[in-house]
Length: 563
Image (cartoon, rainbow, N blue to C red; front, side):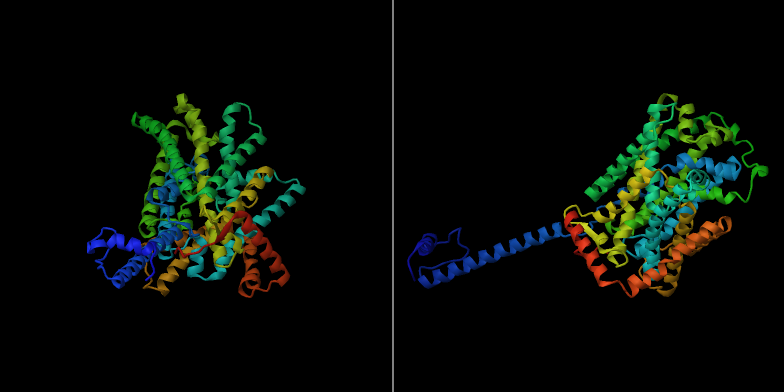
């Protein structure tokens, strides 16, 4: 054996045949034994270092893998539902409910029934969300229960209404009939809570108006400044949702607590005045002479508009921690809370304001604050603005996940199924909505698709719950961690189809066009999805653009399955 540092080190560590703390085995003075001992020691150390390195590499891979992470616990889940439902509706819709119901008592009954109906729908979606653990909401449930065609039509409606928006705006601009849109919105604003870019534009415009108008009261605020503040609000929400899921959830929790504080600020003075005997506005609460059955459905439309958004948690199922437990709990807690708060808020309104005064008010919450909360009346518009911002944040968090899942299933361009490699957010899907909302804000006309969106919203929700019932019958042994009672599911499905039929009856022209435009997606599905008859040159151009966008945005496909 050659002499050198290795042998000298060996003799130094084993001299005298004694145990050395740096040597893991007993070594004799024999040269062969010392050599075997040295080789064994080195191999052992190398294996230990290799194992440590593998553990570190696995840990690093787990942290850096491109995927959507489960970061939404029970409190953020409840906040997303409450924060999306409680937007501007409770501060605007009471006027429409009272106008179409005809009496104070019946309007309160409508608010309670709308809350119960929304709870029924949310429970149905809780079963769907725990049965199918994919994100995507309506799209996913239609895909899993009724097949790819209805699911594609859901995405097609979203795409088609975006395109139809620009066409209709151009047409209305040329025909000088844009002013008609405002009157449509005043009558049927409840119907327009499904078309996400337009909804986001409306909510952001309400945010800008409540922020700016107090500085110019009693004079009207400049519309250009309102639009600028609205765009800033949308930009803030988009930036938060692009940055990280945890930041978006913390923002939503904060804004939800603020808007619940605003509701408590309205409820407490009203309940105190009611306890002191101020009940004159509740005398003859059910005036049968003022009830008109033909307008009663519009009262329910206005109430359901204020409760809209209960399904947004189902858009992010793959990011909810322990969804089998947290989704049903979050839905039940949030919808019961919202229903109780909404009824109490309306009781407070009627305690401090007569029905005639409420009907004359364009901003019920502000009028209430000027009468009951004079010392802090200036704070109410700010709280309402933050409430709108919370609804906007919830919408921008949930809606892009439907595009993300649709692209992942091959029903939407693949670029929208990609995730930022460091932020782990569906960046392309979030950014897709931003320019649309900004354009609608700049043009200022965002109410063209009111009746169209009403039909589509309730039609696809009804199809989703009908698909749930069909799936129960066809696959009775499919695991369902949460199962809603059959009577609740049937009742909600029947009511949804009734609302669709009522839309056809009350406005057959616009609703019929909405149905026809939805069906135009059938040939598109068979050409682009089922058969994929797309020219090669067009595919190459599209693939090149997608590749450049992927490099620019630093996004990649999801590397592991999260459902």
